[in-house]
Length: 292
Image (cartoon, rainbow, N blue to C red; front, side, top):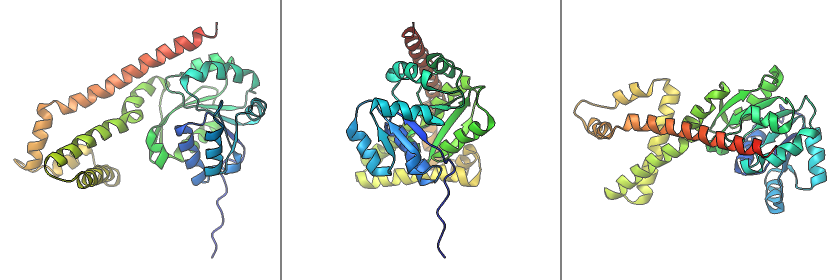
């Protein structure tokens, strides 16, 4: 029996204003999960025709860097995803504002840019979804934090969730907690990669070939994450189950404790959040300065 093709959840156009790697990750997820048909996805950038051609060939999406076409797409799209670099935001948003109608939903993936500043640059109280995805979105295993402006109604709230659920899990937070989320999930993959680097290096120093040490490390990290996810047990409980008194695992954990591993990780997350706030503040001051 033939399986009927999936009906896309979003039947109208969605414009990605910016065509970098994160925009591509989200588009890939949306198309693969049948949230939107490829023909309803429009990707815009400022100049790179080669990049746009690559995206069109790979996903079947519509693309443009022609100013007249870009204006038409932006005026008519019910959903616009801001995916440009922060340094390009001032000009892009100031030009975008006059094109918008009140019912168009803006989804921002611009790190450090608050809802208040986005609305200030647009010059309108547009409904805004502020998002912080991470790089694992590119394989459908992302973790995205979302915050909503007061202008976002229930249907657009659900739409924002659906878009990012196509590339992983979502969580809704108060906007002032976005920097903390950045410290955990936004930058979190880098911490895990760093620990994996150390584990691989330890294996090599202990006589294992690079390929074996890498394979063992990757599977160990993957298995540990899956254990937490599938059993529902707390990491601390699972750790205790594999830590025999006076055994080799306990000896290893004691070394980590002497290095203050637990508090160091917490300090790293806190510093990431603090730096995110600092960068956001600097960015917003620069952007708003350019409006006067």
